[in-house]
Image 1 (tube, rainbow, N blue to C red):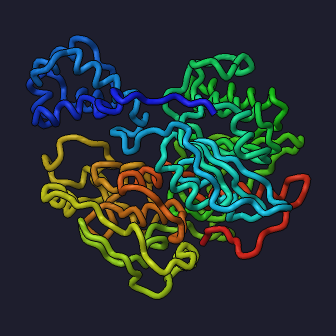
Image 2: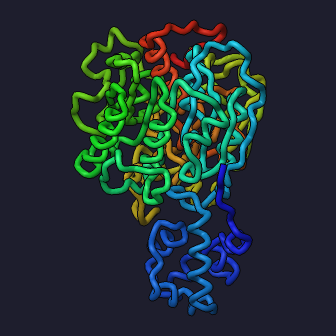
Length: 498
């Protein structure tokens, strides 16, 4: 495969303006004040989320006592290596390095072969494997730490760490062979304006990541595909983007349908809505699975016929939603800045807890963020919203910031910053700290046996960005049951549900 190298100059200055500020021994607020730049604007510039114009570059240069060209060069280098949409980069992007499968696929294996695009930790494809009848043979993601976690949990999968825009369907086929199912959720940042998908070519550098998913599908032509994304896709550009994507799949000969799914309606202890598009080349009208758990919530998409909701159903015929305390109540207490590596009980209290342990003998990643004295004071006063804090304790933030989770309901949507109380509602319902990575993983339905690889910052982002494996299992089981060729369920596999 062809790949693009990152030069040594780029590596040396990839810390961007933040590195220059640190070298100048200036705090963020001090630099903003000296350069007469709004603090929030400087934060966004440092994170690669706002443009750096010449006037601002000169102001920053004067404040730090360096040349404007140095500021511009450092910022450009940072943008070339940073991870879009995640704030500060936590891992240098890959260069299409390949991690071989830990063991070859057995000869004569009859399971459907799955390729996971934009795989991250591999939650979606891991869910497919838990369903039985599927085996993951490959995954690609921009960041090496994601591929390290992906390959650690997919025994027969090859991992590629690099930009999907720099490879091709033919190159992917050389590595993983033919595939039966493609799954993946292209990052939602930077949706481009509508252009006819049938005019796309692999050499067109304007293509965004959604379009490269389409290109891979066109080149590899699997029997089935699963495309997941944020609910905002439904209304983006008045719904035109979603319609264009669905039309592109249809033009390739796929029978396509889409729904809005809340993972909590299928036993995940988290209200997490996603748009899911499923298509096949068999001419089958996909039958969407019915909810298994009753949860009362208000959809971000409003009332739409595409919403797969448990609300119209009688709560007496469905299982109650898995609550936060159902999911994490057996985990031992842990204080801010501490870690606990053994279970307090020999087994879980609830069915979900017993299943989610998945035979793990050692408790991992149950470590709490070390909060400052000021943050601990905020946490001790935290309630269900930021409005529960004493006046003046915090000066900014959304209503869901600095607030506790409800023990008796599914959690709010987990984000990539769930270990920081200033993020979306993520403070433990009873303990004075934010959630631990292990608690976040459970709310995403990752079993305790799942091996996360990387630093704490990397693992937290892997968890926050993932598709809940249990949701992947539900979709996989529906596909398996409707496929023209029935596939046997492998022994020892079971879904993660209450």
